[in-house]
Structure formats: C-alpha cells, structure tokens
Amino acid sequence: MGARRAGLLLLIATAVLSGCAPSASPGSPAAPTAPTVSGPASAAPAQAPVQRPHVRYASQFSSGDTPAFIAAERGYFQQEGVDLEFVRFSNASEMIPALATGQVEAGSAGSNPATWNSVARGIPLKLVLDRGTFRPGWGDQALAIRKAVYDARPVQSLADVRGMTIAATPPGKGTASGCVLASGLQRAGLTLDDINLQAINFPDMLAALANGAIDGAMLNEPFLARALGQGTAVRAVDIDQMYPNFTISAVVFGPQLYEQRAAAKGFVRAYIRGIRDFLAARAGSGSLSNDEVDAIIAKYTGIEPAFVREMSPPGFNPNGLPNRDALLYCYHFFRNEGMIPEPASEQALAAVWGTDLVEEVLAEIGRLPEP
Image (cartoon, rainbow, N blue to C red; front, side, top):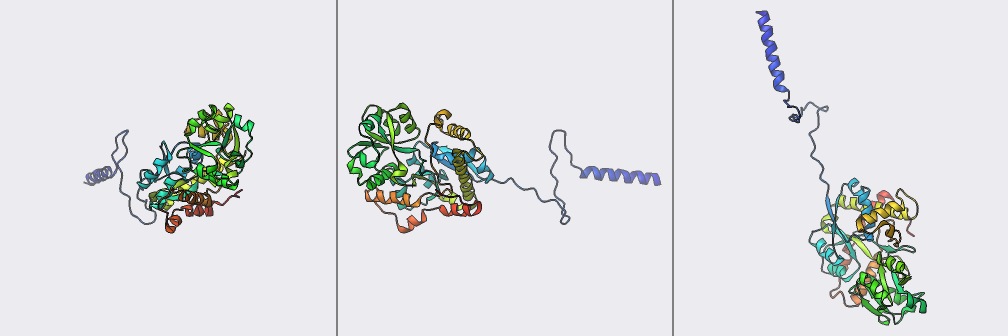
C-alpha cells in the first residue's frame, strides 16, 4: 500500500511539473511566461521597442548640407535618437510649402522673399541653424569676372564693376545672392542700378561667361570651380567682402519638430557635431580626414571626390548659430524693393527664431570661439 501511494504521488508530481514547463518545438521560440511578482527581485515587464522620431529633411543634395551628411554618415542622428530621412527637392522654393504643410519636418531656407513672405503670412517656421556663413577664407560662392574682362580691367573691389553685366540666379535681385551683392555695392558707393543684373541659372552662367554674354556672375560651387578650372573666369570678390559673416541660408524646422523638444535638440546636437567635424577636417585636425569628408560630400552630391577637392569649402559657424543681423538685412532689403507686399509683424519676426534650441544644446556641449 505504501509503495502504491508513493508511486501515485510521483505520477502527480510529474504531471504538475510537465504542465508548468513551456512546450517549445525545435526551432520555435518558447512561449512567453507571465512575470512572477515576488517583491523587489521580480523580473520587470518586457519593454516595447523605443520608436525613434522620424525626421524628413528636405535637401537639394548640395554641399550646403555637408554638416547633415557628415552627421548622418557618422551615426550622430541615430545616437541622438533621431531617424533621419533625406528627401530630394529640385529647388528651394518648393521646400517652404512642404514644411508648412508637414510633408517634411526640416529643410533649408534661403534668405529670400519666399521665406520672408511665409513669415509675414504667419506660417509657423523656425530658423534654427546655420547652413552657410561666409567667414574669411570660407565660402562656396563669389563674384567671378570673365577673364578677358578682368585682364582688361582688373576688379579689385565692387567699386570696379560699374556698368558691367553681372548674372545672379533667377529672379536676380530677389535672391540671397542679389541681396548680398546689393550690400557690397552699397559699401562701395554703388547700387544695383549701377550694373546690368541678369537672371541666369548657374549652369547657363558658364556658357554665358565662355561666349562673352556677361561680364561676371555670382557663381556657387561646383560651377565656380568649373569656371576657374576652365580658365573662363577669375575669382574677384568674395561674399565675406560684401557682407562679413553673411548667412546665406538656414536650417528650418516645421512646428511638428520644433515642439518635440527632445527630438529637436537631438537634431541640433547631431548637426553641430557635423559642423565641427567638417571644420576640423578642413583645418587639418579632428577625427575625419579631408579625403573622408570629400568622399561623404561626393556620396550625397554625386560630384566626383577629385573635383570636390577643387571646390571652395562652405563656411559654417562652429556653434551652429546663423547670423541673425544678416538674415534680417535681407528681409528689409526685399521689403524696400517691394518684394514683400505685406510686412511681417514684430511678433512674427520675433517668433521666427528657433535658436533657443541651439543655445540649450551649447549650454550642454560647450561653445567654441567664433572667428
């Protein structure tokens, strides 16, 4: 009787243990078991995967977006918890409507009438980061003069261009290039009325210089390097001579991104790291070599690395801050020229800046000297 009782207890124990154990077939994951609550030593509930904020960045894939390219290639956005997607746009004028309607969360905006008219209409855009500031020795755009003209009449400053036919991208006067050229002419005692300003696209400027249709052009890279390499033009006046530390465009956030403070600051932090890597490489220091930077720029722009080396480097503020005075100078210039029919209110001009994000990040990572 004792043996039968012991055998029965053994069968019961075996059945209980078999019912508690998870049954998993070979190659199949074991069925999850509920955590046992037994005080501080109990297992924590399984956490759902963290969803990274998805940020679509509008880009023309030009060298002006080099900080974003570097930050993406080096994994800085991922490290900051931002899932970045570059979205190609054929021209800058399409970016502002896309930002305003939430088709993209960030992008670039030049200091042009389209940007400032959007501000005047109350579109809630934020100018956040520097996307091109012309410091001495830095800058991917300049006034180039046709070599035959330069040889006959050397242009040492803008005071020497009176009466010349100069090209700028369409619509000419209503561009950041037109704005900074007007500023430089004013410093030289001239106005845009003292030259013949023609609206011509960058690729067509090369042909116009070669066939003598124009005397000079506000050329940016890679067209500037091509004209100089072909011997059809001479680099005459740099933009930092027209307006020192002129900011030609800014990285803009739409309201969705700006209001997500963690994601917005993560973007800013990654972007500034990209700026600093680029500046350090071009100065011959830092963790990236010039060849590595050239390869990154080539990958995103489609320009051959060997030709990237011939291009003038874009300039950026090492702390990521745009020159607010320069941007506002162009607002007032376009307003005076009648290109902004309804002025932006003081409240709108005050609210357009998103540089508070940059200041918060700089308080965390530190500032660098600004030449």
